[in-house]
Length: 128
Image 1 (cartoon, helix red, strand yellow):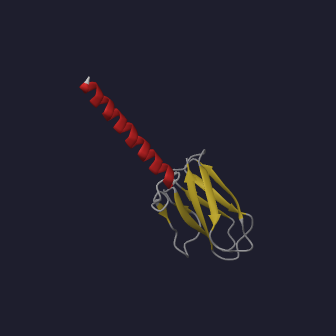
Image 2 (image 1 turned 120 degrees about the horizontal axis):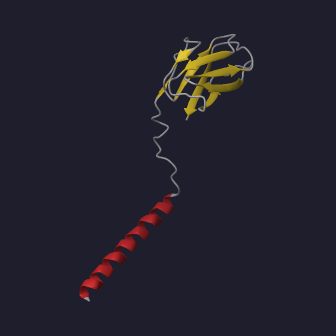
Image 3 (image 1 turned 90 degrees about the horizontal axis):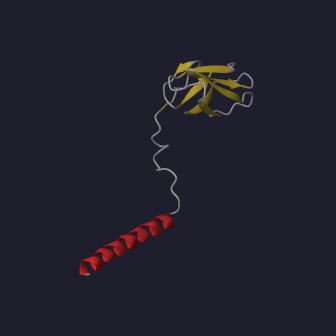
């Protein structure tokens, strides 16, 4: 009987600890991802003055459109036809805006709505 009581006490302590830990986690709020996930994203930032087609075999990075350019092809071994490429303009140019980012096997194409007046940086993030 005493052995049974000891086993029951251990179970109650284990349950109490689990309840305490879950209440502490709830008090901190939901945590969907570690805070360093995006800070440590492996990427390539293309230097200012380097424009046109690039080979970037990483899931994130930047490319630069030359003045008057409307399209850039980025060769990337991690991209396939089903990849989703998110792109954002990083330079303020009032004449050109992002039109599309189209993935294909081994590359993706970023298109602008019109020719840019000056060198324009575009950032990208690829998901598979």
